[in-house]
Length: 369
Ligand SMILES: [Mg+2]
Image 1 (cartoon, rainbow, N blue to C red):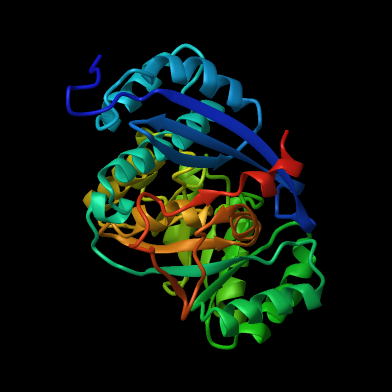
Image 2 (image 1 turned 180 degrees about the vertical axis):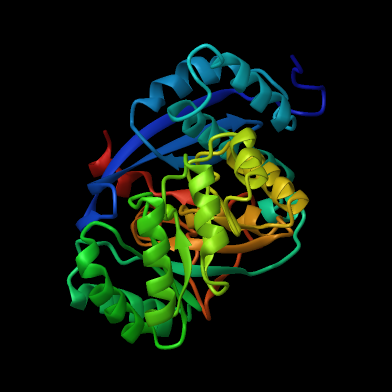
């Protein structure tokens, strides 16, 4: 184990807290319904600074973070994030690195990068090294529980107020209603790019029909998880037979690098997705970006926009970031410094160190689990 050097401080404490925030309306997609989101916030302290990271997951991981993961990394040199990531991965070997374990390590990793950047007095984007200074976003919501008025208001807001070039809606809960719902969305956004997400609800045969119909009748240009992300062969068939104007995307459930390698090697997607709050934090997202580059495939970030903003500036083949309704709302409520969109992009505030975020502890307290 690497310990703190004479010139670098050691990691002193790692703390985790969970907050469950109700949605503003009931929400559903093709395979799930929900009425709240749980945010787990991690604070990593060392050298007189506090690093902040977070993930959206189950509240049970707070104990894993404060016991097992903390034990594995406290006392190490705060500059050596890769050494601490390796130590965390070893510590959960026998209980599972994927799923909840991966969300826990992702939140800690983000806090460690935030801490390092703050100790160096740099924005995280500058520490990582930028290839861009603005990050394109696409509006994402359009839940299958929404009324036509809800859908229209949300989508026209993203298109007109925020300047989004693309928006994404959920489909697949009630397939017979989807042509009408997609027509409402199309009317709300005019010529802007329309994406749909089936969340794995369809069979291959049904997905082929839906992809072709939505491209032909409504100009849909992106079909996410038309079939289960676990069905790489099925995704590949849909991709190969989809109209050339429709891209197939998946990857939001990737917890490790091998997952993205298998999806890319299978030729399952036109655009790879990854979520830094699940795939190993800032470190895991950067690695996914390198894999995408090796496979000549663009990478799109899934959800948690405030957490992805800086790392998105550092990934060469980065396409766009999902401006997900629930997370945008939570991040605005609970983080000072959460990004605001303008002309379809968000940009890191380079006057603030680290991720540029401060957690509003007292505002969050009513939601504490
Ligand atoms: Mg999705």
